[in-house]
Length: 163
Image 1 (cartoon, helix red, strand yellow):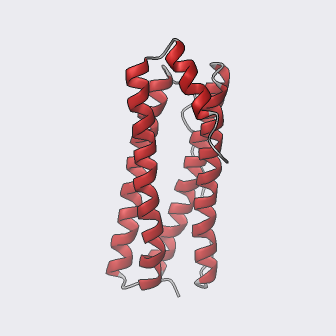
Image 2 (image 1 turned 30 degrees about the vertical axis):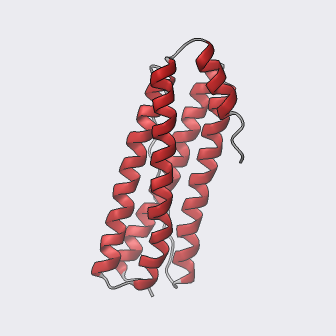
């Protein structure tokens, strides 16, 4: 069974994962408005992935005999200066999520909650991938700029992301 501290922290993480989904959906809306359907597709897939992360925590709480409590989700940012600014925000957000996961892991260590530690290993590895992906796209955008043929080519490439 989960300690109350661990349960509260995981419930907060569920909210944070759902906020991530909301944020990426907002970014997808920005890209749709900018006529960049490949970027929008990438963000929609990212949003769905974040929902799956929330559900992974949701299911874990239920498996451990806890009660999921859903908290209100803040409204995400809706306007951005450029595609590059979106991916700067994406990388910053993923770094914040990484810190949240690390804090959860630290709590699991303190609580001697071994099942939570094992489950959180998956999220630690996932965050390495999330940060690397956002960083790679940001690097490409920094080389390509916010307009022109390179941006269109990147848009087409991002549109190929599997869902």
